[in-house]
Image (cartoon, rainbow, N blue to C red; front, side, top):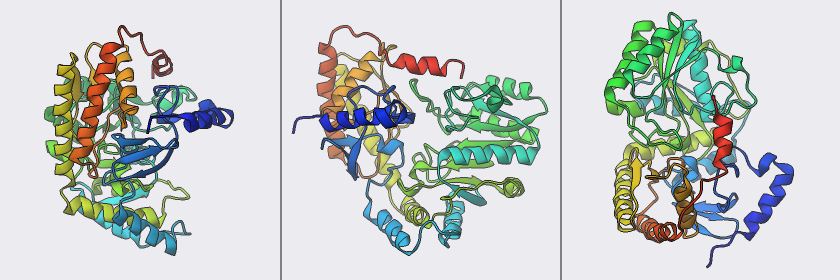
Length: 426
């Protein structure tokens, strides 16, 4: 059927009356193309349906949680079975111990685990533990890195105070000299170095970690008695079956996890080594839903599938198929793409598109042809995708390139000025 958005438009109008701006956060209508759907009715496998019935091959995977496919029957059955017996109870079920055992078995550096709900919960706990362990205050954070939406780390300064962001020094990801300068600036007050597993900032090319940078971060923490924290919320189990920095031979003291660890069921985790165990036991953190048993049951099955299936190799192969096909199609249509980061977490940008106008137009054309791409955020390949899904995306991309080619000169994407203004000085 022809693409339509009448129901979505009506919901947007209603939302404006009862939700600030009609939407907030990563799906803000102030950041996404105007014609992108905001409301969805169902999802299955690699596919997503909006409220108007339009079907998409979904390369956002719920912004990362969908690893084995939406509505995966094995994972969801574990969730439903546990929920029937009891989910959010006065205390946790035995699944909490089982999951902590499974996570520490799966992740090399981990000796203990704590569970929460969002990535922000896990990174904030890591911050507190590092300061409790060292009795110091200063943390080092890479410029542009995203570690959550709490006042200490939200990318927009609106609603925060200078004290919320005190005791932070910023360095350039993958730049050893910049990292060492930040450590010197911290002096005797260094509590932790935060690092993303890869540079997955928005609007700019992704970078894999330089092993020399990762090793130096580990050395500097050891030299200064600080903790090394790898924020694996977004990339966890998408790059490796271990903490992502295992690929460069570096083990952190703490790692934060979320998104894919229960295939979309709401749970996140903080894993740590014994060096930080006492400090972890000395902070107070909790949440009404942090001990819910059903997401833990789903996570146990997800971890089993991570250990026993070839999901990782398949997502890499599918990502490489997509990357090669897009390069060929772009060249044929007279464009050059920058495809950066791991193939299974693609970020796709046009060369010579500082205004993002080509990217927004191309992504909108893809969306109207049944493929949900994102114009400025890294995407994800899930294990439920097939070669046919990739080929469907490539066919849509070829048509979308023609739309851009025929559009003539394009002006800047005006709505992006909101983001640049809001992030100014963040």
